[in-house]
Image (cartoon, rainbow, N blue to C red; front, side, top):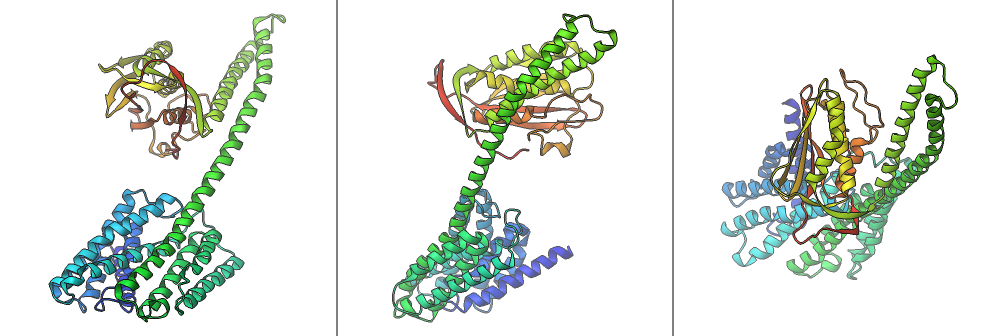
Length: 538
């Protein structure tokens, strides 16, 4: 509670102090400003510290508006709008998939969406209060609303990225002293050039854009965010004091000139940062993926020859074709033969992984009933299940589960899931397979009564080279690639593979879902490319 109270106090104080700074730049009745920094602070507070920060934002907004509002009731309504607007903006950003490191183009779009949509709440509430209670004439409602809305939105677009640039990130290592000096010089140049531009009547606002773009390219968010904030601050000061291109302009003309500049400054900063970060990560991933795929492919092919020779000689020795081996050799020869077979299986898996790591897998797609693939996989698994005294039951369901894809690859997924269910079960394995159609998808659930998946393994369960070693179960031979390959194959078919439920000591349920074929798709084969959606393991 003490820590929570301290956070509330810090956020409320920051809101109030930046509000006082913003009011010095007011263009409408001492209350409506072209840039309202507290909205950026409130949004970051909700994003980083959680929605429980609303009392701090409400307190800061109320303390700001009480001395200014046309009445106490009006001040309360304005404060409520100023609280709900950043709350809605943060919620919209989260809904749009915002990541706080702002390293994707999608993150830039999420901030723009939240800023423009959420700030309409505060602009509407505040403008209505000013019009209904008298300070602003009715015919000025639209202009007041526009200034309020753009000011609040610019507070988010300029201040929020600046504050988020201070968050630690593994992709943003600390700057050396030379880099710090370079960044300081670049920001000083941005301030100087912007000041010169807005102190004369020549419309040269675009001159500052290359410097902001350079800051974004050289220092990513840590350079672009402060550069944009500095340039915007200088421009707002010039507008308030009727300097340069703002001299003699009406309020509407000032707002158009200023906010067009601010919007393009904001977009040229963090949108460019997000684009560059996205391209860089994509290039690194592609290069890494290609190198790994080539290594695995070459390694699996090169090792296949020696293993085949080794397996052949072991077979000859075991069969007695080269002479009857001594009795004491039989057990070691059997172990060596089993391990050679295991190594060949590992080579098969590594080769499959090298194919998976391409961006696109070319396959022959066919329309088939997923239940038929289930039946075939169960038939392959039943001998192993019966050998241990268990069995596999199947509920096919009544619906036709037509899917389009590679039936052999889907069979590999089912084989891996069934083999895991049998391997990680103490005593006789009882595995249940259920097929159904749910929400336009063909769904297969494979449930067992095995040892379950501990909590600490779930996050990395689908990662490569993850093997489950659990007490009470004999260690399973392999590389830990089965679930990784299975999920990648599911993604290649536009589907998903998840651990739906697991209770340690009481079994697990894995669920495979593949989109049902659209009506009109007919039987037959055709070459097609199946694109994969990349996801993090877990």
